[in-house]
Amino acid sequence: MSDPEPCPPPSASQQAAFRPNCHDAVRVGSWSEIQELLFAESWVPEIGRYRSRYAYRGLSDAEYPLETTLMRLGGNYAQLERHLLRNFRKYAHRRVVERDSVWHWLSVAQHYGLPTRLMDWTYSPFAALHFATAHIDKIDRDGAIWGVNYIDTHRMAPDLLRTQLDLEGANVFTVEMLSEAVGSLAAFDRLSDTPFTLFFEPPSIDDRIVNQFAFFSLSSDPTLSMDRWLADYPRIWRRIIIPAELKWEIRDKLDQSNITERVFFPGLDGLTAWLKRHYSPRS
Image: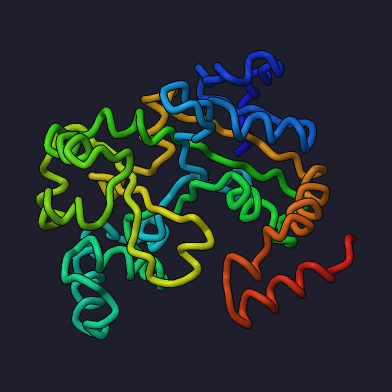
């Protein structure tokens, strides 16, 4: 499977209004160009500040779909979801969650590697760049960064959930907000006959979530991949292709900016992962 023909990249003067209007990707040609694209549309005139409204996800291989770990489990995964979560709740220590709600449990389960319908995103375009370039075994493949406008995404959510956001004056859900609105995954899935997606922030379980500026996407249909859902809404997302020949330059500049495993994965595991990659020869 190969990437489709890319949309022509916008000029510098078009960056502020950049919105892809096709299902293709913009292929960058330089470090400076990727910075312009990542921070396009970040000016918010109402507050006079630069505040991007995009969730970012970096992929080391541009061919990877936006599939959840639950989907990658295979088999009858949609039916297995409730069994996975039920047994995680049964065997995990109660003190691993601050509140006994399905949204807290889902967040903790995703964080510790249980297959779930959640998908990891970040507010930070540099964190996404890190994950798109950190795997040196994929350094010879084009990478990609997806960006999804969570404000526009939430405009398509059911009334109950949009009202909850409006009452809080928030742009993104929290686990507490979801707990107040919907008590179970089954009830969440029944809120609309049309599949919808939302973004929510997990509790600050540990420094990894904090340092990665992480949050999750959640679909009302566990069998619908994010890229398939986005295909029907081309104006709320962007996809930037990082050519393989640019990856070493981007990687070295991120390292010099302290955007590394040592920061995103505090502890000896992150330290050794950073050192192994940092000192690997360029072959």
